[in-house]
Amino acid sequence: MRREIPLILTGIVGITFFIQFFVPHSPMRELSETFSDWYSIISAFAIWLGALNLMKISFEKVYKKDKDWFFAITTIVTFFLILIVGLFFSGGRQYLEQGSGFDWLYRNIYSPLSATMFALLAFFVASASYRAFRARNAQATVLLLAAFIVMAGRTPFGDWITIYLPEGWRLSNLSNIIMNYFNVAGQRAIMIGISLGVVSTSLRIILGIERSHLGGE
Amino acid sequence: MNKFWERLLAIDRRIIFVVIFLALSVPIFLQIGLPIPVTSEVQILYDALEDLSRGSRILVSCDFDPGSEPELQPMTEAAFKYFIENDLKFVIIGLWPQGPIQANRAIEDINESEDDFIVENGDTLYFGEDIVVVSGDTARYGIDFINLGFQVGQELVIQRMGTSFEATFPTDKRFGLSQKEFPIMDGIYRLADFDFVFNLSAGYPGTTEWVQFAVDRFHVPVGAGNTAVQAPLAYPYLDTGQLSGILGGMKGGAEFERLVGHKARATLFMTSQTMAHIFVMLFIVVGNLAFFATMRKSDKQGLKR
Image: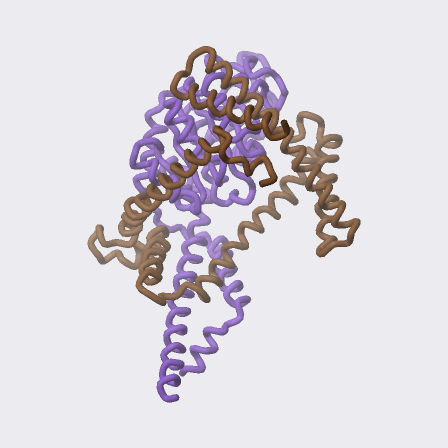
């Protein structure tokens, strides 16, 4: 029954949403609304489950002195610091308001650290472009040229170096052509492919053919 | 000469890091203004907003975190300034937990008010952060804007809003009061009651989900501000008319700032981005030259053997 009940639930909910899309009337509408609310509630519990799981893994790592166990201490300390400050030292519901303890942590620790992690990309992209972006063959050369045009065309620099060319040949215009035609064609092909994959996988899950998400074989 | 290329190829990556650091940081202090032409996708979004009548209600979904702040926060600020100046009312929500916090920060940053209260007809109405003043125009919490916070559930949140907005966001974030107690929410029962949706997105759930559910299912016009990495994924929706304009990355933000007449951080940061792009292109050229020069040498040595 541990496998059958989730399969039956998945089937009922999936078919309900499917029918509701084409028949948005009673009782399918009410059913899909109820299922949507269930989803929100389960998702909220999933956040807690994820947090507790993170703590369990981190505590185990520290207890067993696994590789990089010191970082697990950082995770535990910051988790409880933000939780305690947010719950007890930030004015209750006003915890998001300017000047609260939670807001201070968000502005001065979380925000700069998060932005720093993202900003590191710029440095690694620059280093990788120097070491790995080579015109080794025809395909790589086309990719390199496209990247060049888009990079230059997406900044005022592109127009500046091609200002003497007719407007249609300026880098900003060429960049727009790449983005609006070549990129869109490629993206559409990928999107259609993904969508077909999602439809077939969803049908397999709803009909109970695909069971890997339940664990086991 | 060959040794020169070999040495160049084996350059310490920390030198590249320093060059990029200088390329990004120096222009911020020099404050050079660059001409920023407006692209069609940004113009479409601006025109869609211009077409809204005064008092129209816009749902702003902030689906990003501080990692994407340099690109999306300037767009958020420029959009809020525009809404306030043009008497457009806006309801803030987030499908990402950090989104509504970022929106709060944007409101604090654009606020020019130094007064603690506002008096209308002899009555003191709103206090402190409840008033936002931009270029002499005032927006009041609960009347002209509201923050309903984050709701868990990804795209299903959008779907649920389609049938009942109150069921999805029952209370406001600041006071915990029922959303029905705020005048801005009068007549808003479902997603389709909004005149426009403006989505600021850094990934999933984001613009794709808003197009799939809000546009295709409930026929609400959606405009988007995306990170530069994510923007190409949204371009196919422009052609089909599913997306009412898109601001792509810092450049999109700078173009939007130009259109709304508030040149701010995105315009300033465009110089840094331009410099970084120039240096990355230079790195690619030099890297390739060095690569082919050393490759030719090794080919010749191979032939001699």
